[in-house]
Length: 157
Image: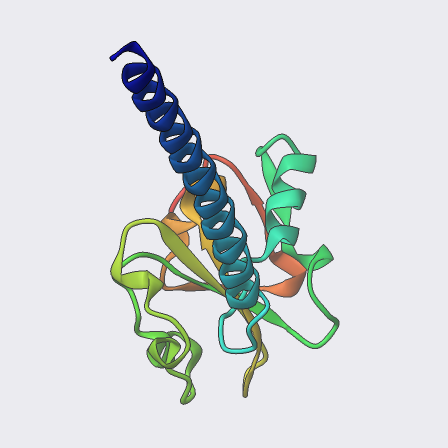
């Protein structure tokens, strides 16, 4: 009887070790697969990126100010701001360009969209998390490139 009990205990231990090993292998597989999926999504040409340059510029100035004139390429002449629940980009810009064709982030409280434009076209836009610098007070406004320095706290004009 004790040999059967010892054999049963050994079998249970082996089963337990097998289950732990299998669980660990599955956990690693799920983690690697998730990383691959996230990497593909972030590098997808269809998914617009979060502009870390804005975050870095804010951090460089201890979140006290940002001068957009230093960001982006030389093509844009004004920066326009869309805050949460303010998707009317065509009215703001004065020409046909619908932000909702590119993103739906303005349907929540967490984001602003910064639009780098000329008088005729959008050069680029950036989805910006409000937790890294909130520009919602400027929602529906554009600033000329030469006057695009913002000091926090933002005073609505």
